[in-house]
Image (cartoon, rainbow, N blue to C red; front, side, top):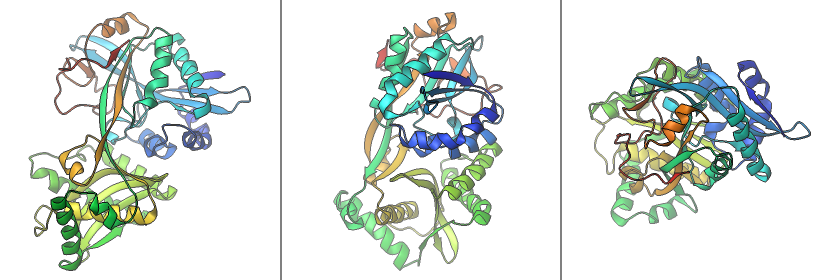
Length: 394
């Protein structure tokens, strides 16, 4: 196998035609690793990062593996600096499920070749941080096996996700919910449609993307302002990412930018993607002052979207990270992936291997001057010394 590390943006653009076909043949196929998501990130949130994309080709020159990384810096106790690697498209974008893209038939060989390339590279790296690998732990097994074979130390911890297995009709879906929740969800839709004349409206015009995202942002901020929080759209770079990403996803036919409209005005909004049989719910917002209905206007919109997913024949509704109470009420069950920290073949990497630290807190932090955004794998409570033992420290 021929292995290369691509650092130039033109070189990344040159493999664009090969990217999605490879992803479709991999075990990590998700919308967050598509070239549409990655290139929107490169143009906005990742505009200034240094790339380190590992490509693996077979003897015929066919692309059989991609590890799309970028370089960043971390500070330990605000003194020692560490060179880090992360997966392109992560961070404040909301992207999850990052990792090695490889053809299933040669996944083990690709992982071994990519990790060997990293370990022997002249490029210095002290740590590779890959949060939210999932949605099942087996997806990260080949990467960890390759790291172990090379003597690289690593640690893992569980990363929780939430999803619904969709099957049958909307009424059959409702029957899977507890009786009280089932009643509230059904009544939410009935009252929204019957009493308020609400309609599910989707943005399907590129020319309307800007105003539609503005409505999403406004409703999102209204939702979070009640909790004294600003929401997710305060950074202009993130708003730029959403514009670029939404246009790319609309062109690909995957965008689902949905609104619950009453009298022509949006009272709830949700952005997600229908990709290869899975609906990914990314962001939501709603008007908290809208007349009270059972379960709320946001839940009514979500139920309508689930009803449409069933009509479209999608098999999974993916809520992404954390199985929170509102997701459980909608019928979600928890699945478990992994956060992975691989320690590099350096003195500082060896030091990190002996410390029970995660790059999601106050001791080991990203240097904001050299990276974009907060770690998407940050837990709700954030001491670096985990209160639970690591699942592995190989």
